[in-house]
Amino acid sequence: MNTPVNVAAAQKPGKVNLLGMDRQSLEAFFVELGEKPFRATQILQWIHQRGVANLDEMTNISKELRTRLAETTEIRCPEVVLEQASDDGTRKWLLRVDTGNCIEAVFIPEPGRGTLCVSSQVGCALDCSFCSTAQQGFNRNLSVAEIIGQVWVANRALGKTPDGDRIITNVVMMGMGEPLLNFDNVVQAMNLMTEDFAYGLSKRRVTLSTAGVVPALDRLREVSDVSLAVSLHAPNDALRNELVPINKKYPIQELLASCKRYLEGKPHRRITFEYVMLNGVNDSPQLARELVRLLADVPSKINLIPFNPFPSTRYTRSSDAAIDAFRDILVKAGFTTITRRTRGDDIDAACGQLAGKVLDRSKRTARRIIPIAGVAAAPAHPCTSQ
Ligand code: SAH
Image (cartoon, helix red, strand yellow):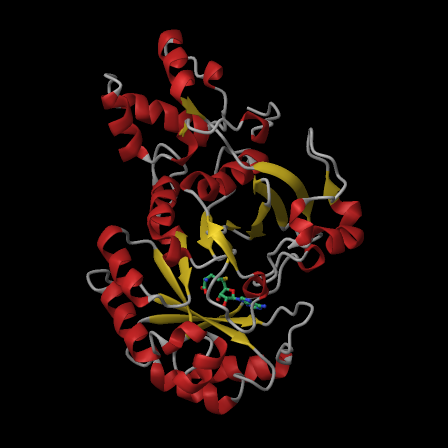
């Protein structure tokens, strides 16, 4: 299970990557090969539960079938360029997805749960004014294999507890990118997260976070019922237009109407609204009261995210006093409100800080870099140029 994989070296264009196939597509694939559909569950268990990326290790699959599979398929996982561990237990993986691009996945341990934050795109097209990913612009969508590959890498590195329990209990699509703009691949990857024969997570423990792409959100309701987080960040259109420009296309009332539709037929479920706390911009008590009125009839939880600064940003983080005052107004009005603690500060693993500036960072964090077999620790990497 822990044999080192140098999967990038095994890149064979034209072959089907089994890593990125959910149960449905694997079953169809095997039926087409003239095989029984249960081969799909065997393959899923080998790849996702046992972390095996080599067909030869799949001993319950006949040699003959393995040879046939090797001709047309491969199991290609993202290559780990760098793994870092924070003093607070947060872990971060820099993964090379192609010759010019890297993405990051972050694991955040908390009492009773372990959350993996996963990216859906290289860069992002939405241009939110307080987000460092926006500064990179949009590069491309990640494939299903590249999305689920982040879970594969982290799961393989983290293993299970001594009692055999999962270490990754939750996945949040809150890394780089807008997941609803990579709809089909994200849905298929989330299918694998919740698939019993793969990662087996409950749908409530897989969260898609969106800036509010309303038509895609309405489509999501038809095909999935994962938990939903919405990056609201402002209680009125004038301010939200400035912070989250896609609001000009899909304004708040349309977004909230779509959120309510998403909850139809899902009793006891709530939407998590994310609200970044920007000093002097969106953190006044008056705006907190406006938020209370806005969300009065939407079953919601509110996550306040202290702004994580990055070079060249014009924003600063709200003071603790302002965040507490804002939270108190929401709590008094009856909203479950959590202030998200910044984690992994020392390895730049916080919300909005996931990007590819390896050179800058490696100087500060060199002592915590965990060497990966076959990967030079030197940060000379295409990501550094982005
Ligand atoms: N595109 C998705 C996922 C983005 S990242 C979305 O918009 O929801 C997840 C969260 O981090 C979003 O709420 C995003 O607005 C927030 N975020 C981005 N940059 C941030 C920063 N610098 N500080 C704090 N939160 C940030």
